[in-house]
Length: 215
Image (cartoon, helix red, strand yellow):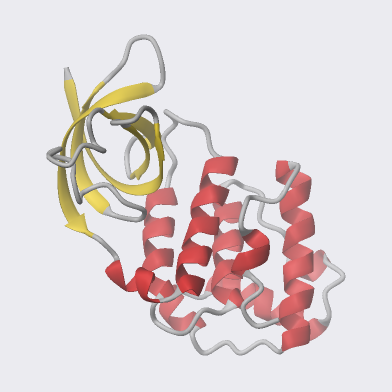
């Protein structure tokens, strides 16, 4: 039986010469993986519909033997094409996708993760690439995992502590007004790196490049 879902593409990779594995983040099903058979053929019905951060409505047939399900149909809703105008935005979005993959299990409903990621990639293009947007994503993701650090119990300097609290509390639009200094950004980067490594064991791929924009 076919299932239907809305989702954002987190990652694609070749499976065979003609097929792709597509990792999705969905509102209701969490993170799921599908096989798009023939997607790499020139005349595939999937052609032009499967790329990073595309938002789609799709249908798939559940596999009884693995977590790779057969992708059936895809209707493209949003490409987030503006992300492709700046390498910094793409690096930050790719890091956030990797962090979602690292901290979640497939086939598990993830309360609020879809909305968090969708809001993040929409917020990225509101301003030039800046590290505080990534810091906010990391903090809000940790919060949804029940692992959000308490800045008041940290060794952060008072100014950095106040910024971290605002990144936790403010929505994406309000965050644009935050202007941490270079020293504060580096301090927060190190602080969150320690927290993430403690809970995940290693940094998600791409963090260094995503946060090296103003160094």
